[in-house]
Amino acid sequence: MGSHPHHLIVQLQETTTVFYQRYFNNFVMTNETSDYAVTHTGSWSPADKLMEDCWPGTSLKFSTFDRDNDDNEDNCAAIYGAGFWFQSENCTVCNPNGDVYPSLTSRLGIESENFWTPTLGDWNPRAVGIFLVRQ
Image 1 (cartoon, rainbow, N blue to C red):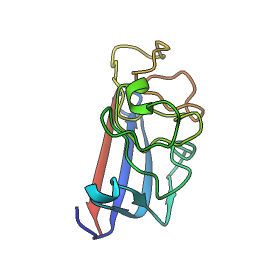
Image 2 (image 1 turned 45 degrees about the horizontal axis):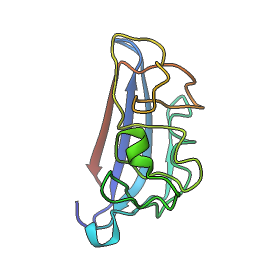
Image 3 (image 1 turned 180 degrees about the horizontal axis):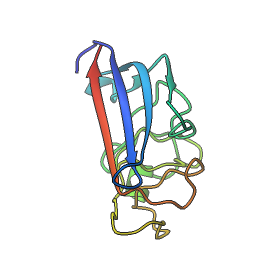
């Protein structure tokens, strides 16, 4: 990805015709040496608040099972079964890289599943797409 700014686009599919989207402007990710910290200049969504509460800040470092960079006393990536830019307090209110169960319409209540609270509550997405588009 380099140092070029991108737009990060996050999409959730509720049904075959209903999607939720959020765009992050001037999204830049650092390299491995800096633990893939990210910055962006703001975000917007056409019709909803998707991921507004999931990613409240910038300069968060990416955490994985073997690289715990979230400044939480626990390894958030190990708890939630996926890597993400977790927050230091309470890890996260969203797990966009978690397991998706497309046949279900509501959450199972397990930590490794894909969830988007408080924005979508107990709703379970049918599909998730995360895209980078170079500016």
